[in-house]
Length: 211
Image (tube, rainbow, N blue to C red; front, side, top):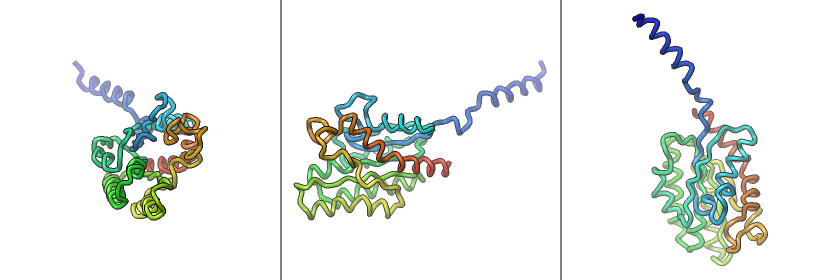
């Protein structure tokens, strides 16, 4: 048997079947609560799914992993962070804090949890988008100001890309939200995706630069 020739065949096969890095979709994990999970919506109408479709329509080879858990708080997001971010994760979108706020949880606790999440994401060398949330008016002016300030301040601290308000253009609209007035309908998700899309495209550029 001609082992030299056989070895050459294996080399050719390895080259033919090797998957170039550019052929592997960029993996972005969307870590969030019910707003990310797609509560009350058909699977295809959720935020992660619609965002992936929009990005692909613009020529981006990406996979958006839906790591949203309905009812989750910043504490819950922190607890499952290691599980949510696999070794093949290229970038992260963080959408958390709404449930903490609706429950009136201490602002400092919310800040500490998000700080820890961003610190761990940064330690992994992953680019990140932090999506902001705004406090409901019934929680009072003092609470509202303290809560709202968490997101821009932490984004600046960690150099994260920042989308000021995840529900921009959707919050408060009966036509765009489900009967509970909190969770968006499919049309509301479309507006969210259109708004955040440019920031996520910048995230993709940053992720490619680190590969």
